Image (cartoon, rainbow, N blue to C red; front, side):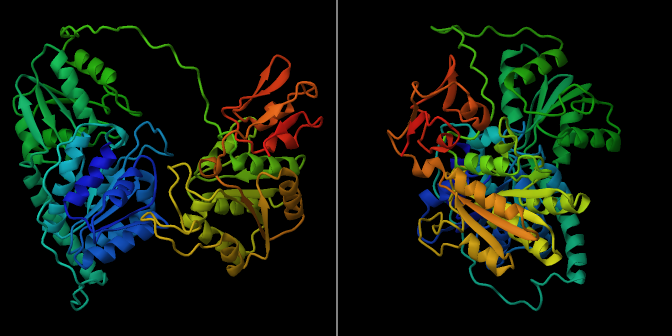
Length: 595
């Protein structure tokens, strides 16, 4: 997997401190380093991306080679220290991997980290494949140490999660520079230092752009009056299409920010038109347009800005082939060799995103929904599995912005409508990530909200990583298990209830009690994720002699294990985990088993 290649490549490059916060599509990099690490390599799931970046900064100014991993929205959380760290600088190589998610497939946004690199004045390395990512991360460390600043590494989803055969190379001989050296305020970012650093950064970027024109990851090939420029995984699609389209053209591959201007000018000379194929934003396209204007080069540049490439979503081999075919004048394609089996796969049935069968969050949402029925209530959500609580038939999330924002948005909603009940749902991992400051804000300012903390003992949506409430680190070390209730009490939340998410009656009663109070109230719904607790041969079943066909269990819960077969409810024994939430709805006690 691309992420494994990046992790193993970082170990080859001498990384000794690796930190991050899980987020698809980046999570497997840190997990690979934890699995494959050598003696002296430290790995950590930090409480959030900002904390990871700051711990990494401390190690890097003391000379360690550091990797900090996150997804593109996590870079927003880490941006405050990262912007300043570029001005402060580092001694050891520091690579910040921010995995972008075109599509988006599992994210709130389609951010392009290349823009962040330009904004923060950071160098960016943009690999096009797992093979290239494996070697390129070593180049990123060399660059970081050469310029004395952190650099960004920007794989996208298809690079992170595709597979390839990668030839491993010998480990690099990396000289160690450990030990913090006091240096008369060198590591204290006063305004005067920031001003001087800014001037140095600008000079360095200009020099780096020229050096990147000779970097092996960038290059130009071919001949003709038309050119195609690309980067990232789109470069692979361009190569595939180029082999199959019988037309001459010139190719440019760009894998870095700052843009390799000298190479770009060499590519443009003698061309009539250029098609730019890239994912997310028109970064390469704008650079080529700028060069044409600055140098007076009469070339027409086409791409996202001109409407010749889509402005959103992933590129695909088919999409790129079609665009190149049109741009190059409809050239003939080479015949694709036949295979023994050309039968098409049958169309797959649609499957909307839904909470898993046996998910404790279903019981938590249902208890709140039943308790708040008939009341004016607004339900604010957060990022995680429980975002799926907005799906029918639960329909229990009215807002979702970013991690930790459900708690603070609920406060604003209540200010606008004081007569409403305002619930804020947040998961256990997200509570530790960015939920705590919002609750402190609510207590301090006397807001009137009910915080529902859905504690399933893992970071489920990104692959089941541990967090501070689990008591185990990514390296397998047992550590302090930090209690959510203790934190709530210490920051001034006086009304706290803990309930079993699978005991719907008790959970509903706790919600009713919370609804009658005011101020900040918290309910901790506890129930392990089914990936942790599932037992075999524990399914519920429907006694057809008792089922009256009311279908309430199917219509109210939306559990994928529950369906209607004719008039009566049916439970799929393979999917059902025996959680028993559906039993609480059945007035005739027709659902049995699952104990």
